[in-house]
Amino acid sequence: KTDSTPTVGTLAVNMKTLYALILWSNQFADMSPVSVFDILLKRAASAFAYAEDVRGLVGSATFTGGILQNSAAFSAATAATGHDLGSEIDATDLATLIGKLNPAALAGAKFYMSMPQFVNLIFKMGSSGQFIVDPIAALSSRTLLGFPVELSAALPAAPTASTKSIILGDLANSTFLFEDGAQRTAVSSEATIGSTNLFEKNMSALRVEKYMDVVSYDSAPKLGSAEKSIAILSTAA
Image 1 (cartoon, rainbow, N blue to C red):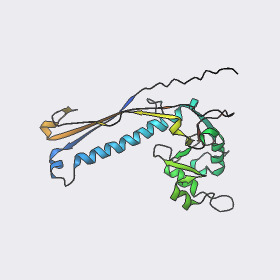
Image 2 (cartoon, rainbow, N blue to C red; image 1 turned 90 degrees about the vertical axis):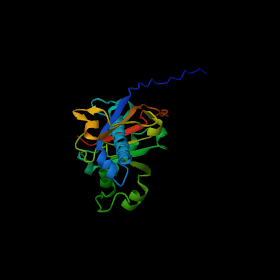
Image 3 (cartoon, one colour; image 1 turned 45 degrees about the vertical axis):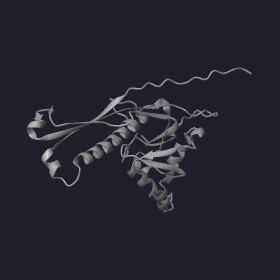
């Protein structure tokens, strides 16, 4: 027998700052029957959650940590010829996507897609005029072909040709979300923001910050397969 030396990949973390700055009138807050501060804090948290999806799943020109941009960490699948729109993706394309996933990642795998894409799939009819899946069962259980479905507004709602549109994978074991444990908040009523002096205008400002980065990597043991822990379906060209 020959000893083996396992290797561990190196993850590069480039923390980004999610940032919100909200101004409001103190008079309005004083007269409001609800807590304006609490509402604004909840809205900021909701906006940050969406921003994390945008940067974590899709990425951007200035934030390359998105799963869709990390081609080294996923297996690529393409929809059938002629299926160049999200509305044309069907069960055959999903089967192609499943076949691109490493078998070791099947147990924890989930679909990730937009709500419009999910609706297109569950109400799509086959050539016989019947639904390709049971739409009531799919909606109530939020599953497709036995896999749970996670919905995100960050993924394409109406994919066009050559668009990465559906993710299938075990992200819990192949993606790290690095973030600070809580949002950092600060309130001021005396700062000058732009040309607005808060003290002079009887206003307050809420500043909210959160730091995050997303890193995907190929985690599943090969088991004789060259495929990855994450598979991504693109519409046809």
